[in-house]
Length: 463
Image 1 (spheres, rainbow, N blue to C red):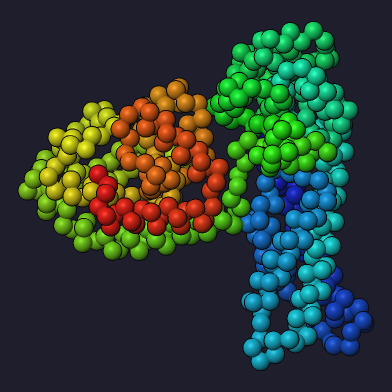
Image 2: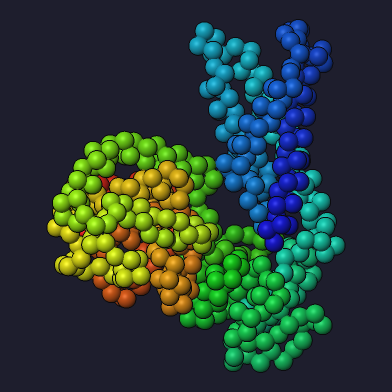
């Protein structure tokens, strides 16, 4: 699946690069060489300018999410995306190239014309790309291996619709139902049928990349989503009339069929870029401000607990399910990682006297700004856990694996809305808070969490 998408992305990038370079050359020709304008050509446009402008527009497209998977985008939606991106790019070019002495000179008109030509060129390239992709899908090339999960007539009708319209991109390899539905009718010779209990097995055996869910109860739906999250499979839900009327979910349109994507990426790429730039800027400043603490804490530990490191290192699981070394000031008696429990009591006897003060103001976590600088963590995100705890949590709460789609954070929604883990029930609540953050990620929410964290630190309510 990833290899196929990488190939499609390469061709899409190539189409955009050719379209943008052609639009740049056409704009220059129309303005100075076509004879439509009396102004002579000031100079011959060098190749470096073509390359720079092409890179500029592709960067704008990428930051606006135009290189995410395009399966569910129509040609009209592709044109809309290009138009919005061109407007953003034009505004940036106006600011970058503005001449205070002549803010409304002929160059402004040239830029407006250039934006129009880029929109036509890149838009036409996108339409041609989607047209070719649709034709290939209709011939069975690039179809996504799909399972339909749901009871009754809705699942059967959905399957028939996918068969009638292969341009939608689905190659249905199976249809599963709750145990109460016997599925007496056949859907075709190449279609596996069975009960929901077979879902985890079929996801791997058939190489499923997408599951479409219809007409399931909440408990069963939760289990289906959990199985798909663990297998790394995308989930689409066909909402019922009740959901649509109440507006409880935002549905997208797929050839006239309403669909709800489970766990979409709500933050645009440009927001992720700003989030990372904020991480780099803040962590650099905080590491500099923390130099006195890095110099004083070794002296404190030399008096109260000389046997042990100043910086405690611990393996944690981060983005992409990859392990990394997390850094903290040591505030407890030195002990191996295997002896550290996931839950720390407020009066834990292992905590050193001065260490309680450090933990109270969250200063023991200051070295984690280095983890942020290295790209292993972010300022805001779900807190990272040790591998053995992660595996245990995933067995109890399969949706826990969803946390590893983003960088873990120095602080998070669960940390500002809930005290440190006190029980299994608290861990359950913490997961719900983490999932809320993942589904509502935004720069505004990150700022809110950071402000709450600053308040917690100033009040000394950490531990």
